[in-house]
Length: 426
Ligand SMILES: [Zn+2]
Ligand SMILES: [Zn+2]
Ligand SMILES: [Zn+2]
Image (cartoon, rainbow, N blue to C red; front, side, top):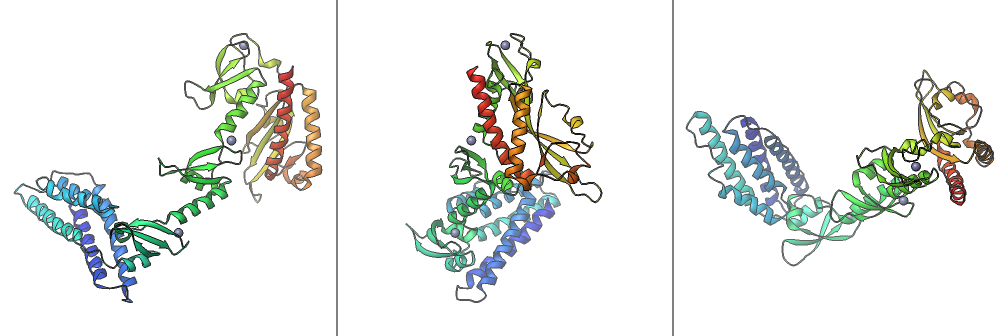
């Protein structure tokens, strides 16, 4: 602790020197840019040194006042307005009794001297003049257009987007003002890459924004998440549409989706059977209509047949790179055995993207055949040549490129809507 505090004091001394150099140079001074960069670097180093002290747990009684004083200094350095800065500085006087080391041992005296010296440094910090704001603004990418209300409030013009925004003198001098227009533009660009439209920040949570999804629903998401979606690291799903799809899946088997499972297990939902009985069912089982009603005993095994869409991932093997394919097919049984049916190697993985229940095996087979014919005709480039996957997947039907997924999903949506209408009519 003592070493880290001493290191912090050295950083603070360098920072004060840099700020004083800056105060004595003017905007006309060619060295001004250089002074500003020095001051910024010294400020960053000081912030890191303060963080190090604040993050250290006190090992003995003498460490406590050191850490407390460092905490106050940290608030002063990171303060975003005059009042916050003044309040933090005021704490040093207010708690002067606590910010001392009263003992008489050699360590106590040494620590007490350090504390006294740090208090003098912080008083000098508080007395720094508000030097040449024009030069600071220029170095930080802005131009001062006007003072607003008083000398502490400025109207800045951003050099990047040439638009204006108000800020506090204090933020400009002791930090980096953020241009709200550039920030919004960056967020809108990221949102576009993620496939949604940026509507604006959430006024209640600075980490969240509102986005318009292609389906027309408004999503509230963390900015970080949208950045990850834009980089392709994760997906973005509209919870409203997803719940509606789950409800439609359940309706076709005579179940009403009531909501999430009361036990909060993420993969379960609460459903009401057409007989009135309410029970929880794993969502994956409902997808296949695979659920016995504990109320009336109706069994899913009487259920008809299914169209499905899988994504198959074959990892890299020897000279062959990793491959991803889409498999569209039908099955009379919930395809728990898909791995076996497709003759996949053990290292392959399969994700079930869609399952559409059909009235009969005959209907499923006819639908699948017609769909393959359509896709082959309209998207011949998306049909993978058999030689390319014959080593990994043992099927006779078409295998498609992943890019065809939206087309296949749209076709399955239409089939699902028809099947749903048929089930509702019967
Ligand atoms: Zn800007
Ligand atoms: Zn939606
Ligand atoms: Zn029932």
